[in-house]
Image (cartoon, rainbow, N blue to C red; front, top):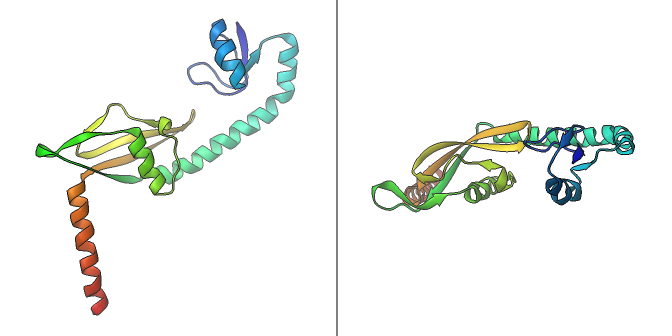
Amino acid sequence: MKIILRADVENLGRLGDVVTVKPGFGRNYLLPQGLGMLASQANLKAFELERKKLQARMDALRNAAADIAAKLEGLVLAIPMRVGENDKLYGSVTTAIIGDGLAAQGIEVDRRRILLDSAIRALGEYPVRVRLHADVTAEILVKVVSEDKVNDVAESAPAEEPEAAAE
């Protein structure tokens, strides 16, 4: 089945490409999602008329992703986790936890866009990639810390503030 792509589809092609796909993939995913249209002479002509609008929309999405990537670049995200003996985590740091941490800082990122090579199961610093668009990827540093240490720091910080105010 030949399809004209109406958007960039990962591992398949870019906007305007004519690709051959299995009939089920075309019928059940590409066509209903509006990601493609059947490749016929009439559709090719119609697509050429519509191409500028689609390209403008794709450029707008790419620019929005680049803006978010600029905010994310160089960001260090501290994730407090419960720790057992030998500094081993209870559970692991998942994309959902990282997404919640980013949301707490005012940056909304879909958890499916966060790329973890493997589950994070120990304390430390880990580089994590965030694919915001097919062409835009940002890297953040996730620092996994113990909840106990975060609580100790939080308790000591307010104690210092009244002393500074008294002076």
